[in-house]
Amino acid sequence: MTVKVEVIEGGVPHTKIMIGGLIVALVCIYLTYVNQLTGMQGFAFFGGLGAVAAIIWGSHTIKHLCSYGIGTGVPSAGMMAFGSGVIAMLFATKFGVAAPIVAIIIAAIIGAILGYLANNVLSMHIPVMIQSLIEMAIIGALTLMGFSAMISGSFTFNALTSGTVTILGLALPSYQVSLIGGGIIASIFMLGGIAIQHPFNACLGPNWTQDRMLTLAAECGFLSMIAAAIMSLALIDTYAALISLIIAVIGWYYTYVKYLALSKRDAAGWLDSKPIPELEGH
Amino acid sequence: MSAIGAKPAAGGSLDPKAAIIGIIILIIIIALAYVLVGASFAFMALIGIIIGGILIGFGVHFVPVGGAPAAMGQAPGIATGVAMLAAGAGLAGLFGGAWAYAAETPDLVVSVVTGAIGGGLMMAITCFFVTFIYVYGMGIPCASGKVLKDPLTGDTQPEYKSQGTEGHGLPFISWVGGVVGGLFGGAGGTLIYIMLLDVYKGALPGMMDAQAAQILPIAISLAGIFAVGMFLVNAVLAAYNITGTIEGPHDPKFKRFPRDIIASAVASAVCGIVAIMIVAM
Image 1 (cartoon, chains in turn purple, red):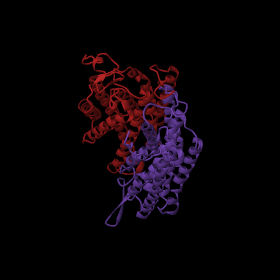
Image 2 (cartoon, chains in turn green, orange):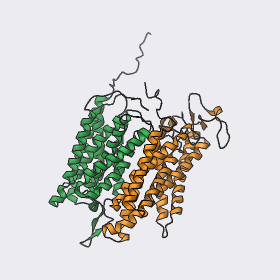
Image 3 (cartoon, chains in turn purple, green):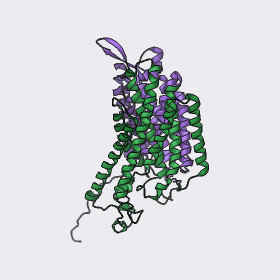
Image 4 (tube, helix red, strand yellow):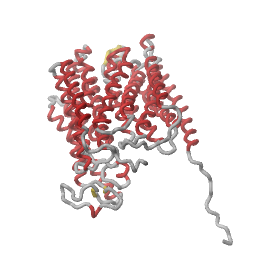
């Protein structure tokens, strides 16, 4: 369908959110690399913050795309983002320190081809389709990479596939105790996928407001981050996982209270009108 | 214009120019894979992945999707989106196929058939309970609005169709379509998984300097997550082709499937070459 359903515009323009989300996510994911430089694991939580930034950007991209009435439901956009993003992200982890940038480039190429297929081969003819699917693939890749870095402390292929297991005080290498070998990547795939499609699905309608939707996106992101922080207990040092957990809970509580306040602001006025009075003599 | 008044721009015809560009991209990717990995097993795996993607894309067109109107009894089909239904059927099949392939002497054909049965079974159970809820829960008969007679049973439809609706419930042809779609989806998802699993099982031990048994969890997890990713990409592309609701193989929208076969083949090739390059580079 080519008819734009919603005309509500205003607030921060999409380009600004896109650039902001991209830079914050990239910088936060790179900050987890301080782990490697210092030999500590306390900086892992930055990966989660990067993923939250990507999720906020992603919810606005979904709004941008789905306001054209693509007719397949909002969740399909989130599934598309992570389906294409996971492929780009896992391939990019092979490139060591350049991984986040390679992930963006590969995701952009995959997204562009998928966008062309949807727009021209499948004749969708939606003006923002190609750009949106490029963004969605990048967002999916960055979200997964952020959560991966937060859970395992690093974003390189070797760190994601190998871990150590301690038996009787003896540290042994194990491939099963790792982000990919343990299948944790499947959990963060769905955690991110649900967090990214929920905000617009929940807020769409004639009283859609940008700040409310973006706050809900941040809340969903932090909620996923809490789950990721608990999973990270299995792979990184306890103190680093606890830092992630505390930051995630604080972030979630702050955004939850804010979202509740914004929901009350946007809700219709409710007046106690009482039943129609039965007057005598009428 | 409102959303209700908007007509889908996507017609039934194939845009020849876009289709040719799509096929050229497909040939370029296959040629690139041949140059990079030669006529090895990895190259054959890419072909397998493309076939799997086509099976998924084609299978999705059989699945009766009603969306929100179906929940209100105003359109035939299952009351949810294409991507959700396809993912449910395909992933249920993938689990079945993966289980069969974990046998001591894994067999490709047996595993793909097991995957197909898993997907078909999931759709059969879903369609059964949907019909049960429609008939006994909502009290509506199953009738198609797109055809006068059910192509399989010959039952007439218009007498049972409520005015102002496009039909309701899950007519027999839609039920059969759902099961056939599940068979194709489950087979396609399993084929992609097995192809990638064999590539990773062959290449990872040398790459990571470890024994085959140690590397197995990583090979299974990588192949599984890539298969899920490609499955969702193909399912969403098919959903874009259908744009909303479809009753099954008798629906006029079903005739759009050639476009999706090109799109699924290209998308699977793009994702497949990246997934193979992770070990081939």
